Length: 216
Ligand code: DX5
Ligand code: ZN
Image 1 (spheres, helix red, strand yellow):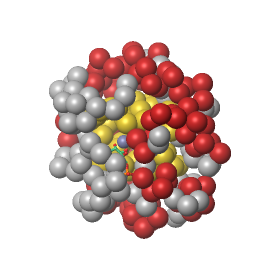
Image 2 (tube, helix red, strand yellow):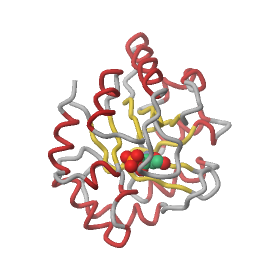
Image 3 (cartoon, protein in one colour):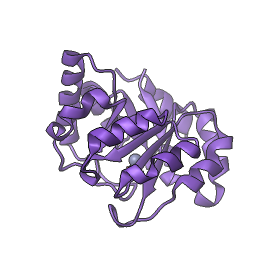
Image 4 (cartoon, rainbow, N blue to C red):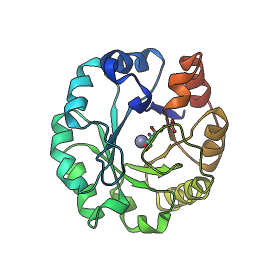
């Protein structure tokens, strides 16, 4: 079954506890938590304090995606805030191998993210240290953008490497996911999908989540 992680970037920031609680009712598998620092990406969202604040509102894993420079400085704060997955951008770190190891050592699942312009080859040497690889299907910085098709080839490549080398990482896709693009990603080998605007704007979010979870 495909895991669905709705992004609370599309939630009501003034009612974050309530919206995080709803994700479980809708049948989601994780809470996707988009952190933006105003330098790696132009926007600023929220950080470890928000993670800590919403933690009591859900038992679902919190899937933190940090779109920030100097990702290693956020490992401890997010561990303390109750994060389960911590995914940082390959483009933002000169020491990806060490950062992945540090995240695992801190007791979280370690993820690495690739912008639309970044090839899989950039992270190939560190895939054995990854619990998750996040393929960005939009340029990070905002919700509600159009899916970029070059993600599909990268998903396929990651699925091939996973099979050949016996890796166990989740292949997560983030940006512009709706029922149509979700089907393409799953066909290509994705195991986990982030969806912000589609889920939060759906007339029936639970039905959309169930539809995507059942894709093959
Ligand atoms: C983009 C974020 C995404 C975004 C997805 O920078 O990483 O998680 O919120 O939103 P939608 O599903 O609206 O494209
Ligand atoms: Zn994200």
